[in-house]
Length: 462
Ligand SMILES: Nc1ncnc2c1ncn2[C@@H]1O[C@H](COP(=O)(O)OP(=O)(O)OP(=O)(O)O)[C@@H](O)[C@H]1O
Ligand SMILES: [Mg+2]
Image 1 (spheres, rainbow, N blue to C red):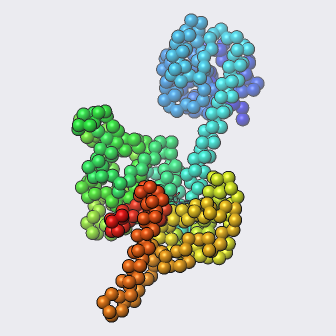
Image 2 (tube, rainbow, N blue to C red):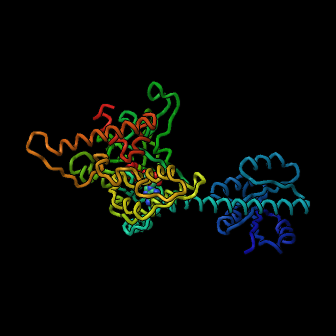
């Protein structure tokens, strides 16, 4: 298909000239008024617009602004009469690609049109590549062969174009956030921000100013106006992570924003409209929280129009080997090392492990292994000891262990528990040392949530 040049000029001989010079190689469209020009630019896919500054019905500068405001991405070249250079410069500042003065020098015109079209091709290419990257980065990097997960993605695909609120439930590390991102990047809002709010990590007294922002002077310390997260997400997606941790006192405020799509900045005098889609995630069972009275039912119904549950890794074991290989490859490529391979026995050991930290834990283990065994075969004995010896598992990691009680005061179970606790305490201390007391990283390393880690730090007085 020929590339298209749109001429917006009321002098018919200009369009005629373009057809003479470029008609053989390009399709030349022409419009005689600003209005017609705008319509043509919106209706036809054009690759270059040549815009006269003086039009019968409008100022060329206004048409230029209008074209840009309507999302016109092709280069726009201004045509000016001799002596209008100042206006042409203004047009360039507004977003015009270049300008040329009348009467045209044919060689100059040819050069300018060719280079503007080249620019147009390149920027199209960049846009295409960006989309490709986006896809790769945000959707295609979700690795799964599990039918349960495929089903979940088919639900996501069906609702991707709409704004319905989605609640993603699942254990820690199952991939809730990566799924939330894929919902955003698969939606028409993908070029606008994806703004995560970690409802568990915000102290209650800061929650409001973080979410709704504040005006200058709203309180001592508010030196300048600060937009809140809802404002930052304008046009995009708000991700309410760990929404089950939202304090009861905040829940009505969030509900109000979701319902009215307007926010009250602290110290503000009027309400500000905001446009966002809401995706939430929780590793708690929210309906259970509603029954317990810890989560408002009205808020639940508002955020959980489409509830989806990500199955834990142990319920989609088929994903374990593919994810393990995927992460090993990823780390090897990152470090420019050969990709290590897992032997059959190592794979079956991975398959029999319960993965309480789910994909995140698997990812961490693969990272450690890739550091230790670059390019080699990974065998069962290379895996961390707790994989094949349940005695060394974190207490939380045990499954189906009821323990047996003896009659003499301290039961066998208690004894065992003490031993477990000792091991656990030791592991946590090591992880904290390893990461300079950075709790987030230590929790990641251990494959438990930050919250759990915090509880345990308190319990052991570390
Ligand atoms: N299917 C998958 N394919 C590739 N990587 C994945 C997949 N699922 C999860 N991951 C990776 O595992 C890690 C944990 O995932 P994510 O942060 O999305 O989990 P989460 O459910 O939000 O966890 P938490 O409840 O602890 O916040 C991330 O690094 C993510 O990129
Ligand atoms: Mg998360």
